[in-house]
Image 1 (cartoon, one colour):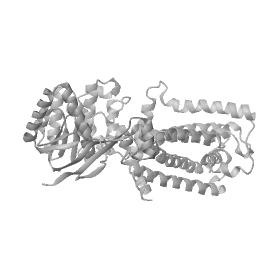
Image 2 (tube, one colour):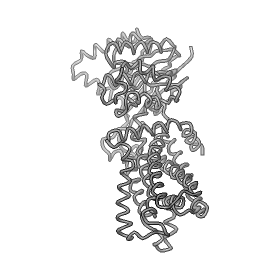
Image 3 (tube, helix red, strand yellow):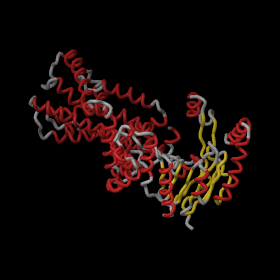
Image 4 (cartoon, rainbow over the protein chains, first blue to last red):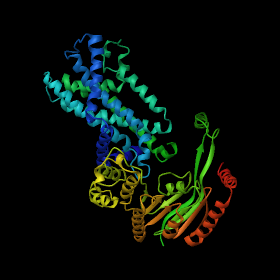
Length: 268
Length: 262
C-alpha cells in the first residue's frame, strides 16, 4: 500500500511538470514533419478507414449493429484503442528511453510514463472531438450520457498508467518485455469487440471475453456516445472487476517501481 | 565545522559479461557467470560545509563513479553516503533537446531539474544573459555549434542553487572568456559557502580552485588531504607515469585492473 501512496503523491505533486513535458513531447515528435500535429489525426484516420473497409464493408456488408451503422460503432470503440495502444507501447519504453535525459537530476521517475501517456491523451481528446462532430452531423446528438464518457476516458488513462507503471519498470530490467507487451496487446485487440461483435461466439466463451478490459472500455465509449445507456451501472459486475484490476495493477506496479528505481542506472 | 557529506565505506561493483548468454545465465543462477568489477572500492571521506574538494586520478580510476554516487545518480553497492542538504550535479549536455529552440530548452531543462513555474519564469532572463547566445536563443539547438550548445547547457545548469554541488569536467566548455566566466560563477558558489566536489583533469584549475584533494587510484582512495600536499605527490606520480614506456603504462593499468576484480 505504501508504495502506491508514494506514487500517487508524486503524480499529484508533478501535475504541472507532466502536463508541460507532454506538450513538449508532442512538439518534439512532430517538429520534423511538414504536417506536424496533423499526423496525430491522419495516422489513426487512415487505419480507421482500412479497418472499416475490411471489417465493415468486406466482412459484414456494412450491416448496422443494434441500429447503429457499423462505421460509427467501430469508430467509437477504436478511438479508445488507439490511445491505449500507443500509450502502453510508448509508456513501456519510457523509462528505458528517457532515463539518460533525466539521470543527472532529481527527477520524479514515475512521471516518465505519465507524461508520455498524457501526450497521447491530448491526441485522443482531439480525435474524439472530431468523431463527436461526425456523430452529431449524423443525428447522434450530445446527451446526459456524455457524463459517462468522462469516466471512461479517465478509466482508460488510469488503466494505461497502471499497466505501464509495471511494464516500464520490467522493460528496464529485461528489454524483451517490450516485445511481450506488443504481442499481448495485439492478441487483446483482436480478442475484443473493437472490430467485430464477440456476441456471435458460443455462450461458454462469453465470460472469458469479458475479462478483457478492452471489452468494457470499448462498449463503455459506445454506450456514452451512441447507445445512450448507463453502462457503468447496467454492467456493474464488469465495472467492479475492472476497477479491481486497475487497483491490483497499480499496487503491483508501484511496488515493482520502487523496488528497482534506485538501481535503474545499473540496468541501462 | 558541520559535516556536509560523509562517505562511509562506499563501494560500487559492476557485473561484467562477455555475452548475452552469460548475462542470462547470471540472471537465472546468480553468481554462476560474469565477473565483478570494483569501480569504487571501500572509499571513506568526510567533507565539511564549505569544502571545495578536487577529485583527481588517471582515466578509469573511479572519479566519475564516486562523484555520481555523491550526486545521487548511482546508488552505492555497499556503504552509505550521508548528505546534509540537497545536491545538484552540473550536467551540461543532459536534458537538452535538439529539436527545441534555445528558449524552449531553457524551460525544458529547468522542468527536468525540478524547478517550479515561477522559478523558471524568474530565472529565464538570467540564463539567457549568461549563455551569451544573443538571437540564436530562438533557433533550434540542432543548428548550434558544440560550443554554443555547451554554453546553453552550462548556463541552465548553474542556475540551480543547491547546498552541495558536483562538477564533473564541466569547466572546459566554450572559449577562454567563457571558461573564466564559468570559473567566476564557481567562485561565487564557493564564496556562498557551498560544498563542492570538482572532478577535473586540469590540474591547474584543481590547484587554484580546491582546498582539499582526493586522489583515487584503481577505485581506491589513495590520498586525501590539503591541496598543496596531495597535488605535489600527484604531480610527481603523473610525471613518473608519463616517463614510463607504453608497455610499462599498460602493465601498470593491468595490474590495477586485476586488483579490482572479484
